[in-house]
Image 1: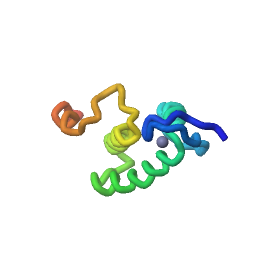
Image 2: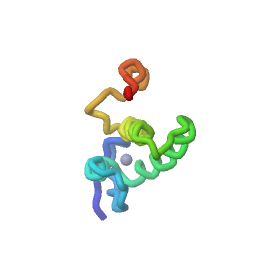
Image 3: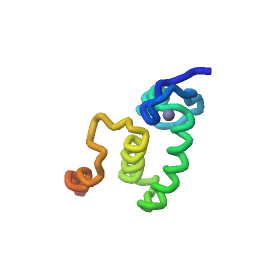
Image 4: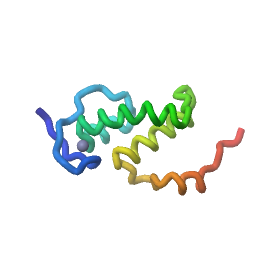
Length: 95
Ligand SMILES: [Zn+2]
């Protein structure tokens, strides 16, 4: 069994072996997040999508899910995950 040092729960845990279809984030998630934490996010993702009424057919919808995922899994290092700040800095795409 492969183990990862999980940034989400701070413990060593079983590595994710399933295909996650995350593109660029796939290897990052798999190297930093344990399987139980990923399972928690999968449950949370459903709630997030319902809560924000996210349309996964939209790039902006997928982007929001990605942000929520990084915040939940504590992966966020490239941008602040504090949602109030996100709101302030958010510029809707024009055109
Ligand atoms: Zn974990």
